[in-house]
Image 1: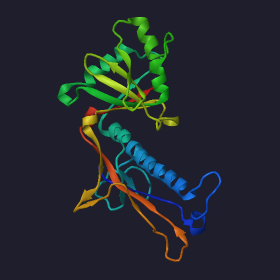
Image 2: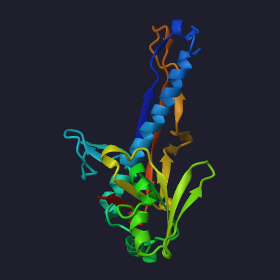
Image 3: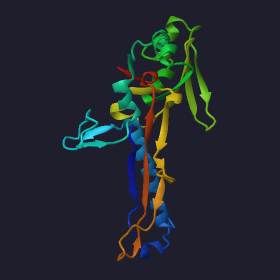
Image 4: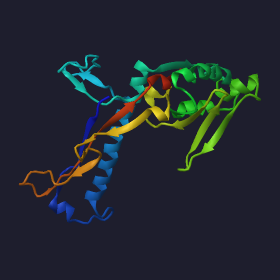
Length: 251
């Protein structure tokens, strides 16, 4: 994998505006600065989820030639990386049940592939809603309860940070479902099962220099009466043993 450089500049704020107190928001510079920090972290989040490791400079499409000088290098996002090199699975909203999950997990949690223990699944709100619906059919609980309620093991787990997670357990392993806001629109039918032991966020560091998120202050030209700062991060995803992760698509 590669590290990717993320840059977010805070718009130039004139000296006059920086010294002015507004009625609603006292410090406009700090309000804008807060928004830029959120924007920077969201850029990193998007890249870690959907980033393509190599893109041809001319066409802008994924490029498999890692030695080409015409290839731009970015961090891989977990979703496209696992689609290419890991495992994929599909389920149907209309008929998928607990039995289908047991059959899939029997193969997915095979110990010879390094799979065991608990996985984390980032899923859309649509998929989480499908898991929680109680009506007959057209839902995970509906399809399962009609067949045999005794074997169902789906529970709500309270996270220490205050949000609720959905836990689906079988004899082969456990998957904890967490809502992922980025899975919306075209991605609302997708979820990604991740092995926490085989994925890490890494920033570039060497020779006593760290490229983890830092701020360059006052990068404006000398003749400007104002201030411009730059937020910079050079980091990427380290994804190991892609066979221990899985992309699931619902149809």
